[in-house]
Length: 297
Image (cartoon, rainbow, N blue to C red; front, side):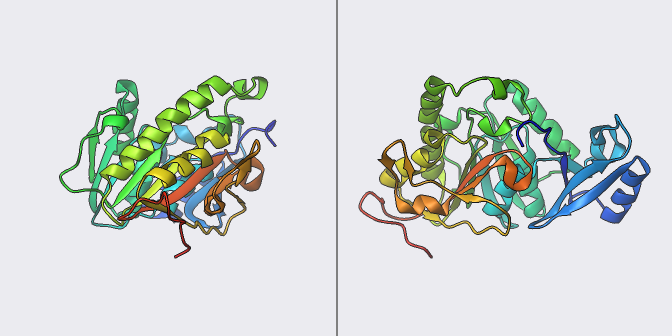
């Protein structure tokens, strides 16, 4: 599976696309057909009959009728499922795929604080927000580890954390030839823990928080979640998907993790013919969980 190129997937942008049948008909004239994805109502797999056409060069893409987005990535915002009229903080937002998806789910109603630290990444984020017709977004530039308190604590927080990127192995051939950099994994794990701790601190009581990475290393995934469960007022919420997936792991290298790690989701490339993804859904509570085991709601 990892030796084959990753398929192209798009997300129809309901904020701008007036009629998806019109979009399908236009793309068909250029040799593209779209296959719907069960469980992801706005996502489609792209098939093309003419080479070397790329769907990114079409007018509907330039005008924001759709966003090219891997379906594993598309699951993240859907699991967070922000509601219209609420407040959301996207702590590591660029280039904007998940941010624009959240705006779409919120029907452009409410407020999204979309943050990133890099100037070049922020330019990509702002371009995509404009192209996709997002009007409910405030763009900020802070180190996520030191993000300031908001006037109103957010109802939702998304931490799509920087990671070692093992799940992008089909997109980046370099990953196929190199071994995991354990030094980098342990180093970035510290930053991931800091970002998630800050996200939890900023969130309101009862807020939903999604932590995601596009990597497989448990040190960047389940171990990060176990770390905050021991130290922060949060509990894990089980994720239920009607798509092929795996549960989070509870044991790694002779280390035992809390059994509720199975509430998390792992997506491997062979399951959806996609990239890889780890997703955890948390809820902020009013007590520390160091002596409390999370319960299924």
